[in-house]
Image (cartoon, rainbow, N blue to C red):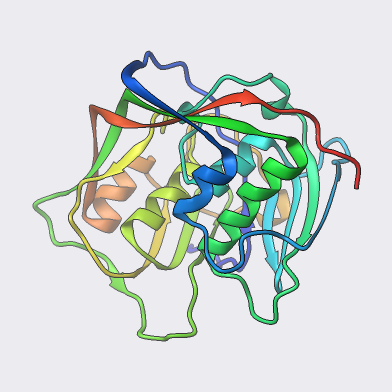
Length: 275
């Protein structure tokens, strides 16, 4: 039984894995807003934002409600994964509360149109700078990664419709039905990392050489306990593990290797300022 396609972004947290890193000699220290420049667009900040502690037990969500960015039960780590498209192992340093303390956020860019994915990422990065006083160092490190490559089998990707009004979106129906609408392979990787089951214990890098935008649909059974919402739990039947699912359902494969990749080192951060 296939899960219904979601129209929200659900953000169950990912475990932080311990990986040995070999830092290169050149380390560039940038403020978070500098790091966000790669995704910055005409709209680079939310005009109004409310941040408050979550009620204990609140399920994790990241949603786009009209033009507003809204979260419930999200950690700073969740926000970093969203803003920068990294794996948890690429976030180094910082106090433990960035992985445990949860917040509800309502942020409004006061735009007439719905913000693009890149605008939302840039504005969320700016929010972390302004309200959490976050400063990051952008470092290059050699890390164990999973390379996404093509197999010899036929590629099973459905091209996205040519629609200038369509925007990137996606989500996870727990425990293991992932959808990405109008996304590139890189976008798909970002969603997999954001909602990664414990077995995806390292960053994923794109080595497919595939261009274009597609409709991704992946059904897998994650290992171990996951944050789930009983009312929204999908029925994956006898869905395979995520590695097998990517191979059989998409014609792609994850293979372990090592490569140089960016690392975000937290220099300073504090609890958010009052609204």
